[in-house]
Amino acid sequence: MAVGTYASTQSTSHPHPTILPTPEALADAAAARFATAAADAVRARGSFVVALSGGTTPRRMYERLAAPPYVDGVPWPHVHILWGDERCVPPDDAASNVRMAREALLDHVAIAPEHVHRIRGEVEPADAAASYERTLRRLLGTPHGPPRTVPGARIDLVLLGLGEDGHTASLFPRVIGEGDGDAWTAAVHAAGGVAGSPWRVTLMPHVINAAAEVLFLVAGASKAAIVRRVLDGPRRPDALPAQRIAPTDGRLEWLLDAAAAGAATGER
Ligand code: 6PG
Image (cartoon, rainbow, N blue to C red):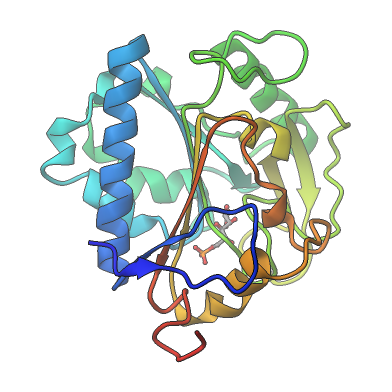
């Protein structure tokens, strides 16, 4: 149940975010959105390709998907799992995004192991990025050239979080990924206060922007200031990489809980 839309103070290219009253309601809304997108994609093309986000916010949503009605309602055998980014750590490391997803979701649903396309955090970052790009190109049937925004050749749903510094995936402020302009992935060195290894592998913005749908999930009062800067502040995509996310012809949606929207702290 949405509690209303964010009272944006300036026109932005972003749609009005949907505000949910609690983190639990946010997880419920995100899980429902995931299930709808999966059903639509499988009905239309027989498969659903989703890129999961890491960090802590999406865990509750993944746990919802691993419980009724979604544990049986989502067509899991037709789902392909990707990640928007990964920490360059082994897959059993506490900081690993694939470990979190396995614990919260993948070990509890009927997904085919060969449909889980993890980023190999245990190898050299540049090799992990290159290997992941090969996987993406094979899965999306685009062996050469830029991502394509045609159904069946693009990611159906990309889930994203938002860091307090304005990063999303592992697109950190003023960090130029080691991929070249056309690369679909990059190895990124994000030194300073980053969980696990400072090295990360990330999808590049143009791959995310080629998706059919991008869903930001942001929760907690600590994110209220950065949400307002990203959505209402001046466009400064180098400093605020989340502002680089603008799907070419896909759907962009922001799901916030009341605290992240500033409602709970009177910041409206
Ligand atoms: C990661 C994520 C990262 C995350 C934000 C928000 O690997 O950590 O991809 O972009 O979404 O940092 O993290 P929280 O949900 O933990 O606040």
